[in-house]
Length: 639
Image (cartoon, rainbow, N blue to C red; front, top):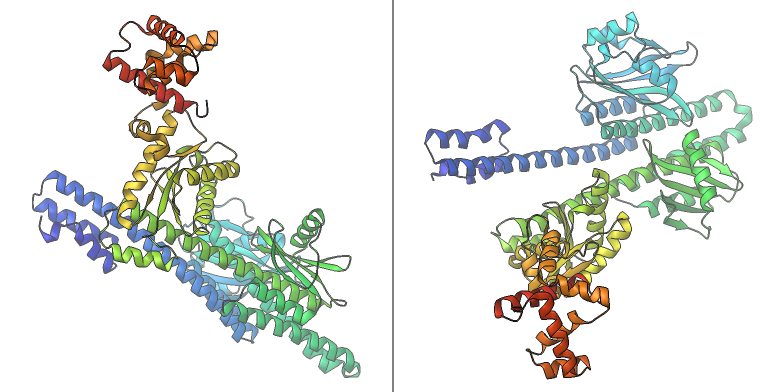
């Protein structure tokens, strides 16, 4: 095969980030050269894999760009003080992050009872830039009135919204088709709308809605801060006689701004929830708890007891409904949310009364905590993907550069040359809904990483590589814990221990055969290793189709009459056969092993002959009887 028609050319295309259409080049060249069909099929397969890798790289670059842009947004907000500059930066960032043609912001006009265009980015129509929307009219008017996000893939044809001539004319002149609008909220009040729009039909996914909501929250904070600063300046100018009150208010506002800047700086330098909790208590005093969505402790500053679960649920629900912190007795609660998702709560017991600006500090701390938790989740998901890709490379592809694999593993804290066991989990545990599959894989990733191992999904299986030498014990632990997580029996087959990257692919196949053998033996919901099943596991691991039915049929035709006879009469013919074959066919030694007289063994074997036929001791049939006895014992472990 020439270089121009080699699968290696797809790697060269990936390396130079070629366009998708260029991946057809090697196939066109191969067909023109008249290469055999099998080589062209190989190139087709290589092209498909290369395009999947290209798509994965594109998704990762896009996600990296989004995270960098979010950090840039926080940095912009920390450095900008002019309200117009802040709003223009947010609208521009929204357009960039969502890849939209146009982004714009409207603010509510309380005096006129409508909403007006405040900032645009990417707009070309003067008429559109001067639009005013009545409350409840159009998509934006409905968002401003209801305070809830709305999205349409094709606004001109969407009958859900109240269309007006003026709005439709402005939207039409701008050429907008797909529109997403999210509310700017201060507490429980909607003060405006942030939009992203396209000039062609486009669906906006849930992640894009959540992203725009986060930017809207920053915009609302900026507007609110500007409002507070303006009120302070007006108070200083108009109420000189109330100097003490003005100073107190100014101090409160400055404290809020300083706290906001400090928490923004925490995000930028990679701080955690513990740092946010410490910053809040240093500014406001008192004690504070940071809790996750399940009520588990994330951070504690001071000696504040964890609240009652029912009280916590009620207070957090009230905070989410009102859109700001709520007070219950002497304790303040602020819900930690991202869009519609509940991420937890901040619980503050202050030293004294909280002013309105102090409440905003707590609420901004909740917003920053939500951002940190989302970042933490993103990092964990990225690390899980990296660990899963490494294991997938180790068990699914020919190994070419073992030193590079060892280096990748060391960066993840994994020593590939140490003893490991491979555990394969059955299809039924992950073949339900997509959310259940993701939950199982997420559990496996956490389970493996906390033990210094790896986990991945492969060929309908969840595979774990765990350090250690007890393959059977690891399989039983995974089966037990995962059965409790999923609420259904989970079968786990294991192999090993093995050491070195070159041994892992074979170990995975062996674990997979062990899993198939457990299914064939009717031992669903259990865990075992290939060593524990012995040669029977090796035989049954290759069973295709309904393995359990094949085993049952073999047992029924080989020793079924003997098993049935024992079941009906309470005899011990099966045990006698096992003892007889176990001592090499010696009647005397079998009698000693069974603690009975030799004549009893003889009589029992005569009964076996009547049940199985006179030829049951001939070598070929005797081998089948012994194998059936072993299978029967494995199907009823401990029996």
